[in-house]
Amino acid sequence: MRSTLPAASLGALIWSLSASAVAGTLTTEADGVQIEVRSEPETPVRDRKTTYIVRLADAAGKPVTDARVTLTGRMADGMSAAAPLRPSSEPGIYRGEVLFTMEGRWDLTVRVVSQGRRLELPLHEEVGR
Image (tube, helix red, strand yellow):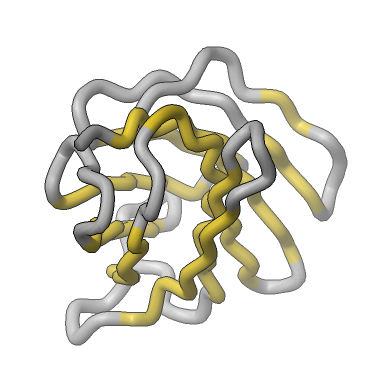
């Protein structure tokens, strides 16, 4: 996953962030929510499922368990992908799979909705062969 800095607040209800990620892992914070995003495998491959894992915690480190988390992706030519990330058996962990059908650069957005607030985290993936 690749993206750029810094984080920018867009208002009381919606935040949009950009953050730096290295080889499949991203950790950032917005408005007291700690967010970790991982992908397995670290580098997605065309026509194979990639699992995305999002860990959410509040400022005290307590898991956020009431969120709706989705991942959407889009290529410049209009190809798209979307996946809900569902709560796992571990509190604060959300998982979902994406099948990338084309190689190249994908612009991704992880959207977290919790307690009437929405956070959008833009990321970039380079999908290989």
